[in-house]
Image (cartoon, rainbow, N blue to C red):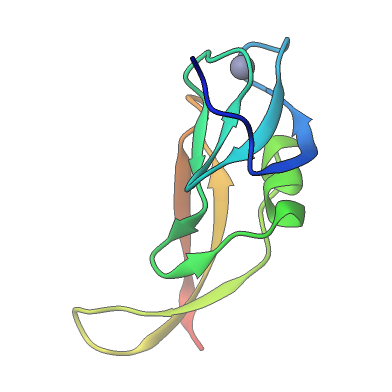
Length: 97
Ligand SMILES: [Zn+2]
C-alpha cells in the first residue's frame, strides 16, 4: 500500500507515464501511478519548492542556484533540470559567481 501524499496539492502531470499526477511523498515527489518517477526534494543541499517541481515537470530549468564546488571551494551557478530519463540533473554554468 502506497502511503498518502504529505501534500494534497498536485504539482503536475507525470512526464514519464503521461497518466499519473505527481504528489509530494515524504522526501520525494513521485507519480501516483508508481511508474518509477521520483524527484528528490533536496539535492546538493538545495530544497526544491513545489513551484520548482512544476517547472521541472514541464521540461523547464528550475531556478538558478549557487553552489560551492568542493574541488576548489569556489562558488558556481547552476540549473536543475530533468533529463530524458526524467532523472534530476545539475547543469553547471561556466562562469564563476
Ligand atoms: Zn508516472
